[in-house]
Image (cartoon, rainbow, N blue to C red; front, side, top):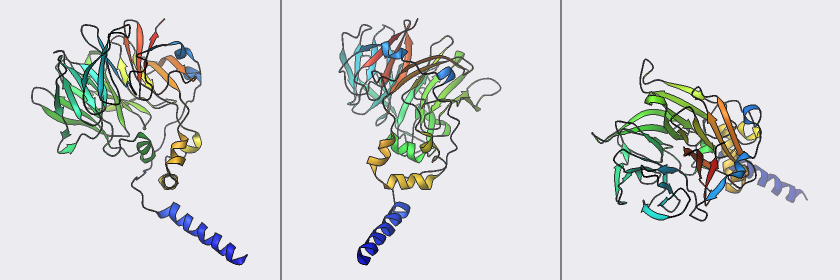
Length: 354
C-alpha cells in the first residue's frame, strides 16, 4: 500500500512539473480584457437572422467575404482557394479564379480588378480574365504573414490588415493574445507597401468612413474597433470607436450612408476563461493539457450582425442562436439586403432589410 501511495505521489509530482514548466511553442501574454456587455440591452437575444435565405449551398467550406462588381456580379472565396462568381439569385455560378491559397477579403478597384487578401499568398490582384498578379508579400523586409481584409481608397491606395505575425490558427492566437497584427497600405503607383499601425491582437476588418476621413480597423481578440484618422487635425491618430462588444469583431463594411455593418462570428467565452486573459501562466497550463482541452472551450455555433451608426452606437442587432447561420465573418449591404459570409458554413446568407 505504501509503495502504491509513493507511486501515485511521484506521478502527481511529475504531472505538476509537466503542467507548470514543460516547454511549449505558444507564448501567452497579459491582456486586460474590456467589459463584456453580454447579450442584453442593445444586444438583447433574438433569432431574426435565422429567417435569412441560404444561397450557394454546397459551394465549399468558408465563403468568407462577398464582393460586388460594377456589372452587379457577386464573388466569394472558399477554403480550397477558389473564387466563385455568381448572380444575385445565386445562379450562374462559375469559378472565376483559384489563388492556390486561402482568399479572405476582396474588393474591386476602379479598373475592374478584384483585389484579394489571401492569408497564404499575400495581397493579390485578379484581372477580369481571372489572371492573378501578386502585389505584395512583404513589408519592410518582413513577410505578410496573414493578409486578412481590405478597403480601397479613391486614389487606388489599398489598406489591408495583416492579422498576425505568429499564428494562422485562430485558437492559438486567442490563447497567446500577442499584439502582432498590423494595418498596412499598398500604393499602386509606387508599388510600395507601408506599415500604418501596429500592435493589434489579430487585426481583421478594414473599412473607410464617410469621405475617406478615417478607417475603421477591427481587433478581433482585443475585442475592439479602432478609428484611424487619414485626414484633418487628427491625421495619423488612432482612437477607440467601440470596445463594448459581446463577441469577437471580424469584418466590417460601410454602407455608404449611415451604417457600419459588423460581423460577429461568435460570443465571448465564459467569464472563467476571460479571467485568465491577464494570467498567462494558467493559459500555458491549459495549453499543456492538450488540444482536446483548450479547443473544448469554443462556444456553440452562433451568428450575429450588428449595425453601428457613425458614432459607434448600436442601432441594429440581428442574431441566430439556432445554428442555421453561424461563424459569420463578413457582411455587406447590396440592393436593400445584407449579404454575409462565414468561415465555417458551406453557403452564404441573404437577409432582407425591412
